[in-house]
Every structure is written in structure tokens, then in C-alpha cells.
Length: 281
Length: 269
Image (cartoon, rainbow over all chains, first blue to last red; front, top):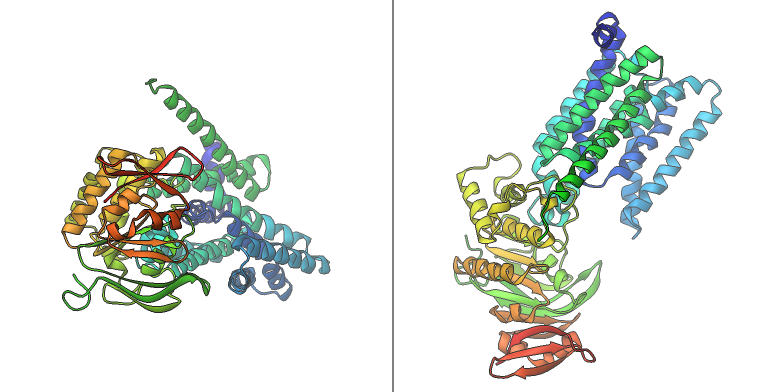
């Protein structure tokens, strides 16, 4: 039993990592549910990578990375909005353009700085084992804000997922609530990148929510399942990192991905058997 | 519950041009619909039916002319309008039960945080009963057939208890029994004073309405069904000929010009 509990009881850094990771899991479960339902995975991916130049600049300037990430997200969303408004190009083209442009800019900045390699690894894969108390409080504040906003906007978010046109016709501005949803994705990514990194936060947004979608019958339960899968991924990933000396962020996201495929196999088999039980007419 | 002065039409359009992004799809629309009346929009795909419906509910701005919806410009009274769009992006993705979808019809009445009450429950159950989806209330939406899903979507609109129902091809994918249920439900809505605008390819369905607007990227005819649903008008709209097979039954069978498959039926007069 101690193998499963001791690392968190005996080491303050492991306990902090568990708390921070748990908060990331909850925020990602809430936001990831709508990312999956609304088919916003591409913009989630683009945002997760597009914050890189902002973070790189903030490291060069010696300011908190979270500020640079926020600036990067604002440039991404603003750029996508500008392209879609000024042209008839589809949104995914605008997202793709900003995605590669921002990623290239980030790599360019990093390549010009000689002492960047260690910091870059932290940006991409997180530094959950070195998370500070202050970062945990920021993560807590962001998770609470995300949860409250999602609770208040639950009805328009649901209508938007069902049919944007019907949401608009029902008096819930599709643009306003889409933008609120984008802001929630951005906040979650910006705050979570310190914990699991910009590359891996996207996995935490998608994998637990995707697994939740496979087992849930209601949006609320999908979110709850996503949180359970995410929390377990954090716990199991940290444990694996401690005992096998592997990168914690990667171990967490890999666990979440493995859970997704396990759930997929189980539900596919269950559905196949259920179909087999249907009597022939 | 009514908009504008008593006896004023619920819907009124005069010289209305509609379209997307400044490009006109149909010009010069003029019609009126009173409380308890129905208007059918008939035409082929791309004829401008959905564009007009979207203009009525405020999704598209009118390009020119006057339009009055429940005593206000389009989009100003969303709580009093029930809109059924043609496409639902997530019918096979959303983890929702049928009853959850119908309950969404009460969201506009309750706003962001208002609690659902007994009246809401009654509206939901009555709408589900009307469309015959009570027995599948607890079933996941994604497990239902296309026709069952469509009945659930219609029930969602019925649960609104709206003054104006705007329906885009509501009977698409419905079998004969479900179409009859739909007709009965619409008769009940009209009887309580609601106003109905429905887009359809089905000439028989249009013949049951008080007014018909026949469009093909322009207005071909507008007025009572008897005056609008004439062979020459339908030929102009659909590019098909009418073959009257059985005058006693009063049924006109519409066929493609070079084909033999029956396409539409409508009562001849």
C-alpha cells in the first residue's frame, strides 16, 4: 500500500504536484468536454502550441511565463478572428495559418537564445514536480473561475453544441458564447502549461473528455467521467514518474491516452455484444 | 402574448429582399400571416426557403424592404419564436437523452440560471406526447434513428410554447405515421393561436396550410394553396410535369419529365 501512498506523504513536492495536477485535470475535464462536443480540438491544439512564442519572449525578458502565454493566446484568437472576418476562408484555414506561424516564431526565438534548452523542455513538457505554492494558487483560482463560468453558461454552451443557429435564434448570442468558450480554453491552456506543458495540456483536454464521451449518457456525467479519468491519470502518472524515474508530465498524458483506448475497447465490445443480442425480425 | 395592436398580422413582409452577404437570393417578397394561420414555403433545394426562415428568426439581416415579426424587427423577440433548423451538428456525438433535448426547448424561457419548474415539465411531457417520443425519453439521442431524432427535435420546438413556429423541412425523414402526428401537433399549435411558417418540398403538406409561397430564387406565386399549387406554377418551380392519374380520388401525381417514379402528391381542385 505504501508504494501507492508514501511518495505523496513523504515528499512535499509530490503532494504539490498531485494537487496542481488534480486542478489541471478538473479544469481540462470541464473545458475539454465542450472542446470534444463542439469539435474544437484543432483550435485547442493550435492554442496550446501557439502560446510558445509568448512564453519564449517572457523567459527572455525574465517575466512570468503565464503573461507571455496569455499574450500569445490573445494574438492567436485575434488573428483567427481577423482572418475569418476579412476573408471568406474557413475557420480551420485561419487556425492552421496562425498555428504554424506562431509555432515557427516560437522556434525562431528559442533558436536565437543559447541558454534556452532547459527552459524549452519545461515549457513543452511542464515542470509539475517543481511546481510552486504560488502556481498552485493561480491554478486553483483559474479552475474555480472556469468551473463557475461553465456553470453559468451551461445552457447556452449546450445549445451551442446542439445547434449554433438554434442557440442564436433562442436569444443566446452564438458569437458571445463561442468567444466565452474560447476564453475558457485559453485560460485553461495558459494556466496549465506550467504543470503539464504546452504540448501535453492538449492531451489532458482531449483524452479524458473523449473517454468520458464514450461512456456517458449526459453532458454532466461526461464531465464527471472526464474528471475521474483525468484525476486518475495525474495520480498514476506521478506514481510512475516517482518509481520509474520518467518525465512526470509525459507519464500523466500517456496514462490519459491509454485510458482512452482502454475505454474505447471496452465500450466497443459492449456495443458489439448489445447489437448481437438484438433478435432478428 | 401577441405582438403589435390586436388583429395585426404576426408576420408581415413588404417588398422584402433576402440573401447572404449582400447577395440577393429572393427579391420582392410580400406576404402577411395572422395568428392561428400557417404559411408553407415550397421550392427546390437552394430556392431561398431556408434563407427566408433564417431572416425571419434574425439569423440573417434583411437586405431591403420591410419585415415585421411579432410586432418587432427580426431577432428582437427570440423567446416567442420556436425555430427548427435543418441540420443538427452533434446528433450522433452529444451525450444527451431524448428528454434532455426536449428540455432544451425551455432554456429561452428560463434564461441562464432560472430554475426549471412544474410548468416546464408539463410543456416538455406534452410536447413529447404530441410527437410520440415519450417512450424513448430516457434513450440516448445517438441511439435513435434519424426519424426518431427528428421527432425529438420537433418536440423541442413544441415545448417552447412559442407564438411563432419557424420550421425548416420538419417532416424530412419522417414516416407516414409520424407525419400524421406532426400534422396533428401543428393543428393544435394553430388552434391555440400560434402562427406557423414551414419550409417543405412536400406539396401535399403545403396544401394543408392557409398560405403558400412558391419560390425558385424568385417569387413564383403566393396566396391560398388552391391558387398557388397549380400545375403550371409547380412546373416552373420544380421543372417537372403533372400527370393526373385519378380524378375521382383528386390526386395529382407529379413525375419527373423523363422518369416514372412518383415524386409528390397533392389534392387537385
